[in-house]
Amino acid sequence: MKSPDLGKDLLGLEELSTAQIQLLLDTAEPFKEISLRAIKKVPTLRGATIVNLFFEASTRTRISFEFAEKRLSADTVNVASSGSSVAKGETLVDTARNLEAMKIDMVVVRHGSSGAARFLAQRIESNVINAGDGMHEHPTQGLLDLLTLRDHFGRLDGLRVCICGDVLHSRVARSNIWGLRKMGAEVAICGPRSLLPNAVEALGVTVFRRIEEAIEWADALNILRLQLERMQAGYIPSLREYNRVFGVTREKLERAPRDILIMHPGPMNRGVEIDSDVADGPHSVILDQVTNGVAVRMAVLYLLAGGSPALAEAAKG
Amino acid sequence: MAPTRTIALDARAVARTLRRMADEVVELFDGTDDLIVVGIQRRGVQLADRLVQMINEREGVQIPRGALDITLYRDDLQTVGPRPVVGKTHLPWALDGKRVVIVDDVLYTGRTIRAALDELADFGRPARIALAVLVDRGGRELPIHADIVGKTMDVPRGARIDVLVSELDGEDAVVLVPAEGE
Image (cartoon, chains in turn brown, red):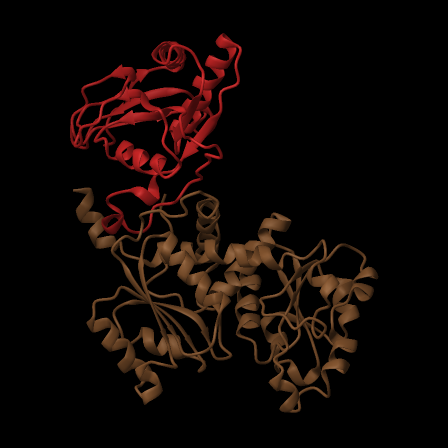
């Protein structure tokens, strides 16, 4: 079976085709089983060296990548910006080139600037995986959200998904919008006017001004974290006000015409964008998202690592 | 011109061969206690299903049937790319002390079985592992042999043996496809 090549890097879902996203999701499927084994490890990436280069704080994503790498038997090194030469003023590219001089195979990069992953990918030989760049994309989060939706509904085509909250600053929202649209889902966003991007309708996205309308419409809500610094920056008047108008509460969900799947990329502000009885409720798949994150990242690593078409031809001989 | 395919075993011959293999499995283990039959993806899984069904009918037992995908254990992953499709592994039982029969369609270089043995070891320590194959075509590159063989064929390098199963291919057959240009 011939599968579509992913190329050297995974930078975002915007540049992937429907077939490539399908391949990533289908490949993630058998990787779920590995994490259920007594010995959670396969020898696939034995000998590969992967650097997790995190210029921004991250717990879930970094640990998820590290589990994925270790369960594929890769050797991993974590570099955080504090305590490294980055703190001494070294540039992104110099840091990466120095790592490459030590013969690495892949770099997983998180950076505060949009486009940082692409900038790096164009300048080094190693595979680059974007683990979140500024307000641009967070492709593995987008993929794990797609996988969780597909697990639950058995399909993505025609599914109605509303992304709620601070869409303007969210790379998770962007990756979700690209991924969902390519897979045939209907996408809406809902949040305060100050936190929604302009001209988003051009991407085929519906905009709801009231969370009640979103709940009326959606099969699933993907509730984004409200970054507390947005309040200081004047985007919203107060957290309590935000919770009252846009917070997803049990009372609001009880009026929904159908059961709505609840997703959140974490970390949650309980009592702000999501109430505890929703986050821990029967329709929440928030922890399934975390479980799927490891399988999706294993699939990405597996598909990007090693194996060039030229070598394959030679091996057939 | 496409090379001429020859049918080595037709549907009835495949059924007859599998029945004999099922008997040999029970004989080899002197019964069915602690027996687990594990098919290798893809067509080994369907063949394992048939064997289990035959053993269950004759012996009045319910033997578990597992599936093993060895892609992630291949020794040529650094050279094969684009990446081969990974299939499902289904082995939800502790294998410690069990008696395992690996089932595959064709035994050739032995590299698939090497990978399967490595993978099984990650699921526990069976008391015994045996190998049953529908076709042994020779050409081993590793010291591996089958305990139960449906049909032994001497197939030259470059030629191909295709095992067809009705679940995936619409018919049961073993087909010999000669090398191009012969």
